[in-house]
Image: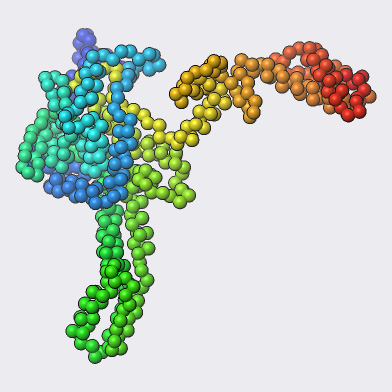
Length: 498
């Protein structure tokens, strides 16, 4: 049912309804974490964080992102992959006519492309988009300022997520945005002046849940283990020892020996210095170095961190031995694109198409999209091209055009390559006839060699397959070939066999 039919049935009006109503009826439900009175500048709760001091929580996520290299690498791998192809306009009429020739770009599309080509004097559109994806990975939310001149956007600016405060009622309806910086600066925005993008949240709400927040436990464990390892290696990885002093040793003597041990035996400069005692003291090593255990713990936490972000190990520089259980590199690429990159890209594009293309410039039949990037290995690409050429799916000129080479004469005819043989598709009938003829020739020759005294009658030859030339003509053809073959046999064969 179309929108026009639905509206006529609901209201009884017969005029054509070109657009949907400007406002929607107010919802009855409430957003999670937003109490009576909604969100104000001084009351920012709700969402997955659920704390009164949202800025402090987001600052902790930012610090964790900067301190943990695996969090940094994962977020940046996602952001760079999403934006690698750049943002382009694509013709998408949505009526199944995508196979038709693309029309000329209308004026509103050209204006949108012009605005994206110069977002602001400091940032280009790729930097803004990369910042959006990075903020989503760290904070779960991203904010972009849209500068309007009349009824048209003219510039885009990135906004700091921890300083942005959505203003909403208890139903979650946004009425504005306020930015309050750490230095006390304050700015207010209308709803149309801010593009707010959120990741999915399990209990809904205005704020999303970031993978950094979900990975805070392994990130924190990794940071503590890394700090412990740093202190161990800063002291030269000293052994864990137990010193048994004589009963007559005084506390002052024990303290003096401990101070001398720290000075003479602990630290990179003292590596290899022997531990010396006197007066009956005994030194024993409690356990061997646990450095390997610390490194294994760090690797385990590292794997948990990148799993929370949905990034394969190879994308963050982790080389797997034999890739056991991890699939091939191409399968990891496909999993990364389908499960991690594409969902985030579509989320960003949905917001940009609605706020900029639809509301900002009134674009119809065109949409913003991230240009596709071929991430396959070059050898894999060449093997696929070769298979398409050999199977006849591509012509040689199509192959050459794909690799940027000029066409050649005769390259527009598809061929089927069978091992070392090749045949043009329009010669397939002749090739089939030749195959049947060769089988008949083999049968006749075998009969002649096996029984040279018995003539081979036409009725003894097998019938040709359906679609082959008439049997009589084939038998005459192979009678001549058989005579030639018999003449080459050692000792000769009675010509009556022919």
